[in-house]
Image (tube, rainbow, N blue to C red; front, side):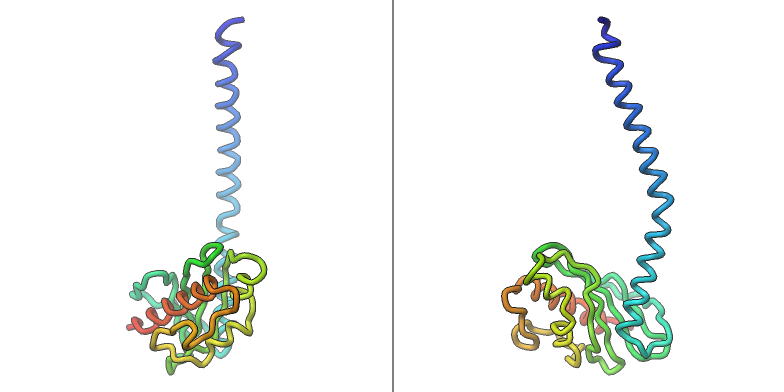
Length: 177
């Protein structure tokens, strides 16, 4: 048996397989990326509308640079703002949308993405009754966990992450020009 059959031929076959698979993955990604981006945009728009139902529409606010804040949107009719922020939880990153009224109070919030542990930790990221504890609080000053809002029993790290994301949104609200 020659070197071609023992060494070079298997290497060439593996390289060809890798090139074909890479091309197939690239083609799939280019076909699905716009669809995924549009679905994400629509889900975010729906979440903003859910948080501020009295808003006619939203426009992105530029020039607000606060750590852990990805988006700031103002209602076009002046009924408030919706700010998207993130924080590190027990299971990963938690993404939170916080709605503020025109007077600076927190209207409501919603966790849009979370990787918290199923069970106790996920209760912080899925239970609307826990999120409702933030409604009506002053959105112009930093909130202190277990003073302004009680932590969810047994899920201190997840509660801290949610509170941190809300505090980032408060910092962004206070930085809106």
